[in-house]
Length: 237
Ligand SMILES: N[C@@H](CCC(=O)N[C@@H](CS)C(=O)NCC(=O)O)C(=O)O
Image 1 (cartoon, rainbow, N blue to C red):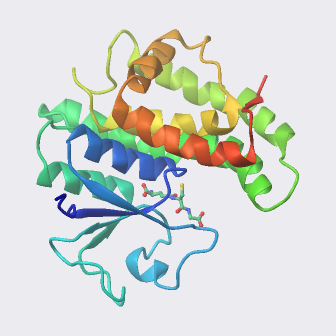
Image 2: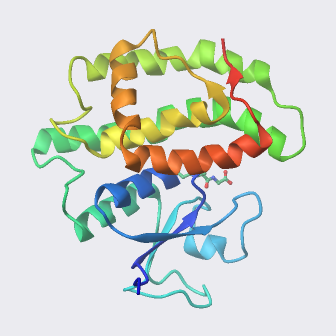
């Protein structure tokens, strides 16, 4: 008989931040359930569990099981906080470099993904397409094309240089940096073909990351949802 896992993730794999949390849990072999939470029609207890009104939210059922959601007991909001928690609870394999400087760099890249890459990919490209379709409106392909041509190159040039010849963004093993950057970039790929030929180091990194079930699995779930509304990724070029 399978045991109920401690972790319950509220959200949707369509969110890059939810996929980041799922990737951490999968890399560590930590079981989880996913409870769908739609940010366009959230439940009335959303702000109780997530004061910043964002997904993902993690519940650790070993701290507090689901109840009436009247308080946030047993829950943590924000993907960075959640991934840090998962890493403490399941230390192996470590997703935060042991070496101090590499650790700092990993946290920096996670923040860069959150603050710079996610808005460029999500707000700039994903939302004008998918949110419009989901709301029955015409997708804004021209603003998405413009974001790819005007805004993304600066971000991708920076990441290409920061990665250089290395296999990973921080230290010499997979870390939260690689997961965060990949999940946020893939938000573009949910709606569009996003060729990385002009950024060969990033392209190779992306292919290696894509070969990991922790990245590919949650992305496939998101893509199958998005494909119902947008059967083909559109051409950004
Ligand atoms: N810094 C947050 C960002 C989370 C975030 O922005 N989530 C989006 C979905 S991808 C959200 O919940 N947005 C709510 C809204 O736009 O109303 C994290 O890492 O968890």
